[in-house]
Image 1 (tube, rainbow, N blue to C red):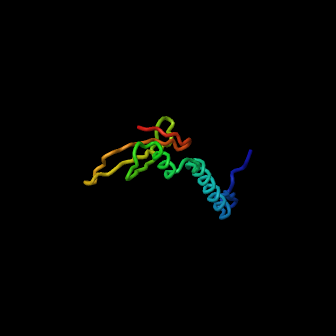
Image 2 (image 1 turned 180 degrees about the horizontal axis):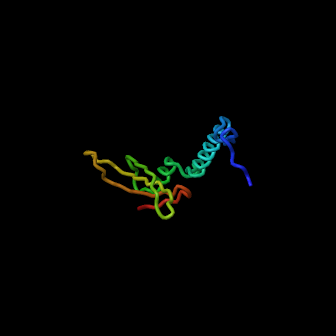
Image 3 (image 1 turned 120 degrees about the vertical axis):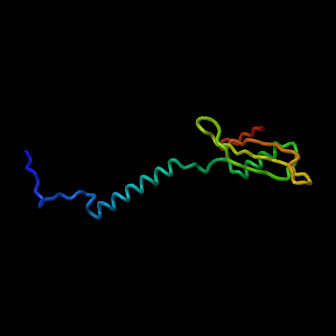
Length: 112
């Protein structure tokens, strides 16, 4: 049976030592960095500029202006570029509008 320790014989926890605290902080930062890298999006998909090029090839007219936004669709979510192509009339209002979805992974073009 172990004898109870007295106040004079206190064992030091690694967290009480400066080097132990530093090691703990480094370990937490390393785990946070790895988690951020694993959860972050990859950049090997279709770019927004390429999505506009693809949408222009499918358009039935030569647009004056474009708008691009990244949208998530489905379960699990899948990234698509929503590309709006439009002409502007003399009063500034759009006259012709076509909207395309470009799959960010494959580049598949879908007119909506």
